[in-house]
Length: 354
Ligand SMILES: [Zn+2]
Image (tube, rainbow, N blue to C red; front, side, top):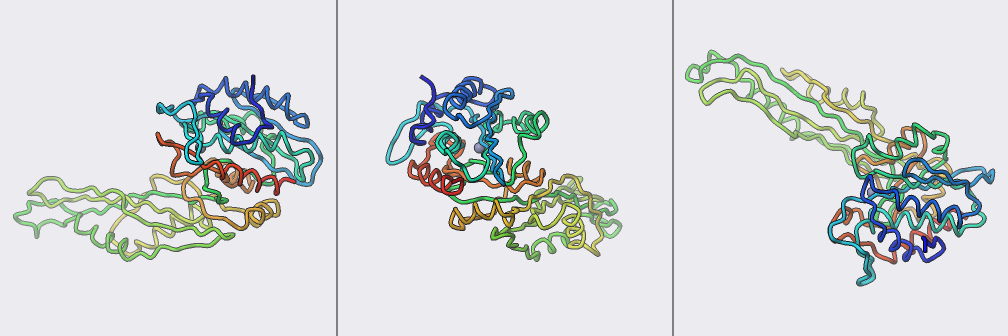
């Protein structure tokens, strides 16, 4: 027998976990999800794209909520099939993120009259290189399927709404000098010594904490690498320090670069930008997102790392992570999820969607 979407989402989580679906091997689970949606979610238009399954209602509601979950997992670590122990369900994918998938699939099959139109995106290959990511392929092949007023990704978030993400840039700060024999050091100009002033500025730097839509972002400016030196008897003529700036999404990449230049202003160094990724604003002030925050009782926090939330933010769609799993247990051999959290997440989203 196939998946029973109307079963308790705890049991549905176990059923999904017991279909192994390491990245690039999602065909079987996608087949089962597609068949179950076609037979058990009558109000939904269902399509298949590679090993992703998409479904949506077309009820003409004033707003559309997109529920997205990846159906792949990291490689199994001798932790299947799933088992219950101490109020928790154990096994590969329980937390990241088949419990989130189960909540979404269950809601799609059991909410008869949603107050928003619903789009369901169950996609492949999230756990590997981003060029393979199923959501990226859907964005290229089926962009109209990603239209929504708010997107909820069921990634493990410990019951919090996690929104936005910080940006990141890396710069290489180089000092130049003059080579000389260290026995006659006065003939040289030591490039390593010039980095002392750079490190002083880093030590004295006071990072901002920025509150945006109730999410507090913590910035950080850190040396992550240092290079210099030629030999034990040579005054070095070159030295560099690589600095990583993690910045709140109220700054653009350009503004972040300008800020870093300002921090090191007046020093005898050059600054080269080597790497940059923009952040994403949480966008929780928009109505469909604000209603979600209210339904969650205001349990909101900032997301620091880059996730697929940023893909939606780049499309101008407010997006959050909200799933029953614990992010600290993702990808671990002892991966597990509290079954009570699956129930709580289902209840909260049902209130929001009805
Ligand atoms: Zn995940």
